[in-house]
Image (cartoon, rainbow, N blue to C red; front, side, top):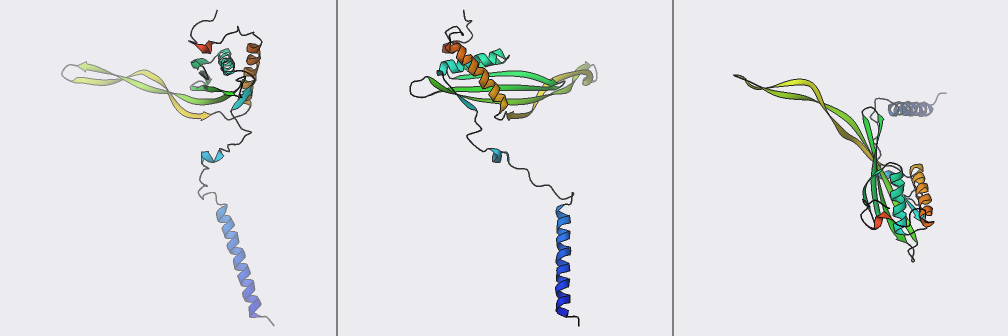
Length: 207
């Protein structure tokens, strides 16, 4: 004999199955709004294995001098070079109307009690620009009418910054630190001339 209890239980199970199927279809619906983007600050892990620094067996002056020569040797234009700090930038044009500028900020601090060790903190920022063209117009004075603005075919070009970010730690900095390390050794061996340009005006040519 058929029991009403079994029929009611079976109906409830069938209803739960249909509801779960509808829920999965709703969650997979491509028209549903996407989840909000993850905030940028949440990717900052502050871990010791991702640092923008390197320890050098040299004084602060020699370490920053090595950083200065490393930038100059790669075509960077220095905007600041004094005791303990070096800044420089270099422009690139990867595409016809796209310009990229990489700027370095280097700080050298003493490490250790005898002043023979120092740490160089290096961060590089990449700014991206696009070429924006604006049409020019010329005002022409006409008697009995006044001044009218006539559009001409000439345009004025200007660079507009569209993106800016700090280059993340990795192979980019490893290559720069490797070049710095070679230059530190040369300065220690007396191959760099025996004096640094960071003690005074860095615009004075070395003899």
